[in-house]
Length: 312
Image 1 (tube, helix red, strand yellow):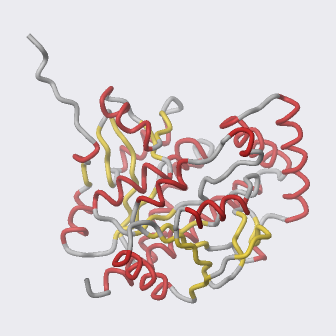
Image 2: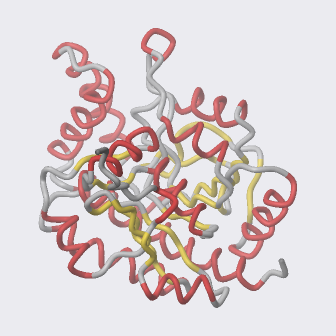
């Protein structure tokens, strides 16, 4: 006789009581990805950063909702014990949208990337998402077809994404071209320059800028009425808080050459290059990483608060 067991599906995400109450009451909520914690920051610093990021969302005026998959069940908002587990488990899978159904069906646990966090946040009714930087088009993508799933996901998902641009190890002009082709709205926060994650200016311009969280919320409200898809709010670090640009550019160039010589390809290139950057900067790149995520989280909280105050 066939089994009647049914695995949970991504449509049956578990909302934490605080997130559920906030959404039911129309109060502002900000989604947070978990890949940064599980795979982007070293242990045990990642656990401390998890609390700091949620506190930054609260400082902005919203409820934080860190998203992950636990034992095959998507969770929107985590308990302290769940965050402990997320930050401590070195075997935790990295889950994009394509991986979610497999993890759910097999009862696996994993940290969500930008693409899967955006999907689960939007399904839960959350309109604002804070992250560090987006994925994008990789260098030499014309030969490798290496492009992050984040880009297509943002074209399909209606929410605000506050980020510090994309890491400059990517092909930034090509990434912006793809976002344009996919009709993803991109605005600079008080700037017409697209940030390069660790540095305030990637070298590429953006056509549009917003001057306040309230203006960003109005842009998304208009987008939501007109067409599906995301609004990317690119929030650069202040110049005096960025990584030294000369050090950054030199190390990135050296690391890319070393990665090529070592035969690193595809998804292996990014951790290879970032490892070089971390070592060459004496850990300063990690400090900058946390700093920019905290700034994005607070701005996202402000945008979510403004969005919640708009008439629907």
